[in-house]
Length: 616
Image 1 (cartoon, rainbow, N blue to C red):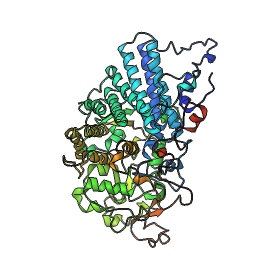
Image 2: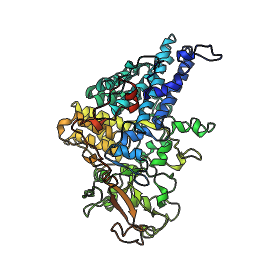
Image 3: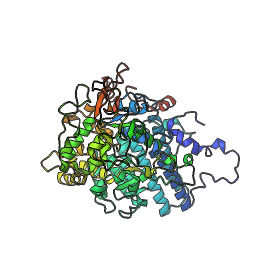
Image 4: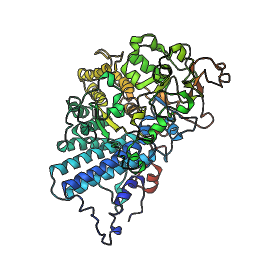
């Protein structure tokens, strides 16, 4: 057997162990061989179910890592809207390494995630390769193969978006094959292939059966294939074909945007299978199975631990929320732009010489002065300011007290400080207690992959880039109107710029912002926009949020002693000072170094045919 070992084979090894020729020298009793397994329609469906289980584990947590939600972190943390936070500097450092651009080729999330995508690709290739080899193709077998082709294309697309030129693997990996078959692909050709795979598979796929068809959101349908094709074409710069792929999806009667008053539901367990969801992986908690024997592997277990609010640093938290480690913080400049966009109030510029602490011209609560402008559905569903968190949400006791009384209550507030936090707390992806597995801290919600809101904005961008401004504006306006946004783009506005801005807010924390920043930096290189301006100093200044009512260190921080009522302020820290360079850079000898992730060290080290990116 071949001696090469690399991470894209890790997922295959366990599955293939019984298939390797040197393990089959003796007859095994009661064992169905690989070639015998795919004979019937039931065999084909069972193989497909196995692929979906593998895929669910990849989407949930990166499979081989098992505890972090690697896909979420990989595609969100490098953007310009969040901080990697936690209890203190160095807490959950794998997140800060991504956020501050100090990761290496053996990063503890990126390396297993890279291998996990290939694990799902391997499972898909078994279905795609083996079912046709087994004999005559029925309609069911054709559908199984088509669904697997789209999953394989999606995984390759995610790899191409994240790692630029990963190998394209179209056959189940035989460890006795030559390693030269596994080498870097061409970025554009890979993404184009992903799109064409989805379009070719379309004829054998089923449609979602209307807006109430929940089963149609946890399997590959024509709608998901159209979504993947449209997105892959967008990233390769084929805007005309992106538009063609997405048009039947955005016009389909099988999907719809949820109404404004349900806008946050799509990211919660009670939104599973709603009319806006195109594709999610099914958690399907089985109480007959132990936590670590199948349930937790399909869930986003440590996502809750890391991302939910850090309750042990607070005097109290709103009812119904699960304790967490406070690993994600909202950037104040993102919140200020969001408020200006959705609420129609300019809170000023939060930046000072520290890059964080607001000066006298910045008011984080400015929009509250006009209640009408505060009724913005999306803003309230995505982020909450600290005063809303403390005084408007239910704490189970004292809710009926006046604001003046709540401002002096000791059952709410920040006892010490919240590292990496500002005046705004993340609300969009917070896990609620009703969606946690009994006795555990992992979510039972399905893991969302694609929704109609993103499809609308992809389609609008494709239209804007191909001269169909009126059509693009129509779908952009649908998103803005549903959001209740004060910003409604008109025909006289720069449509492409407006779409880019809207994507920043609508798709917040959905793994889109960082890939879009990279894509636009190439596709729109001549527009004069520095898409990386906000992240060049990442890690040089990190905020801490304090409450003057509890702050024992107020005098030290220059804000006075403890006060008799709650007052929230942000203090700027410089945790990486003297530790080395941090923040996004474009080295002169490798200007694209940080725009894509490096191929994992173990792959490059094990296979001479895989080449590392410049600068690593």
